[in-house]
Image 1 (cartoon, one colour):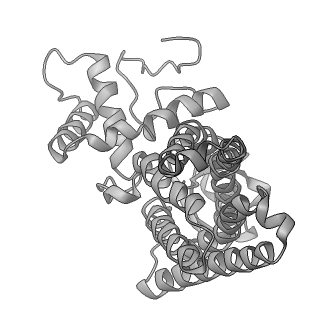
Image 2 (tube, rainbow, N blue to C red):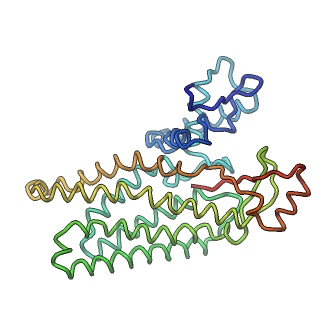
Image 3 (cartoon, rainbow, N blue to C red):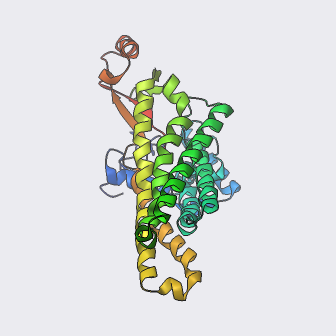
Length: 333
């Protein structure tokens, strides 16, 4: 293990699977961890492979792993486990909602959004597809200590889709009315602005139960104290910029590359290359930006005691002696 890897060994010499393989207190360590969680190749793992990985992780935690099991085998199983199972419930996530599906899913949808954006029907369809995918991802990776009803899910989906379509159509119509803008690269950035607006609406609405009821906060050793609305707000405010920044390289770099190809007459000579080239640039960008942006904030986030609600702060001071300076919560992704 290199200097960026946590000790991962308990006093008995066993791996501590409650922690990441990499130091989560550093950005580089979090990036390495998220590269494993979002590795698109893990989406190819069969249900049998995933179940075997889960069984090995569970067995190892109980000290009942098969004789001769190596550390690397355990870490490989943990990588598959983290890519497909919810960190709190242990349930297998729906395939389209897994973080390992972020790169291939976003590559296809984002690439099509930036290829087919000039007509209103195209804008509506691809923004609808994008928000459908976002809704699945947001719900799958929510903090599981709060539940959300079907009505709330529908409200979040409709609101985010309406916002993204409204922004896209308005901007597109404005650009089309200007001969200067319509011939330039500006129009290619319409999808990015629509996605940014939608994320600001979709994520808070999809996680509204957390904001209303709070999410579970615990001490460093895992003792649950209660639910905090302030922690929930902090979690959402960390996820929103991460998601917008995640889209920025693919939806910002791709239009520039495609505009350069267009200016050189390549697309005019080979119109068939438009979509494949867009998908390629988008995919390469997402492979880097997805883990890099998911890692901006720690998955297990800290909130200071002074930032908690007064009644929760009082509860902490009564239950834990001495009172900790911070409590911890799962911010979601």
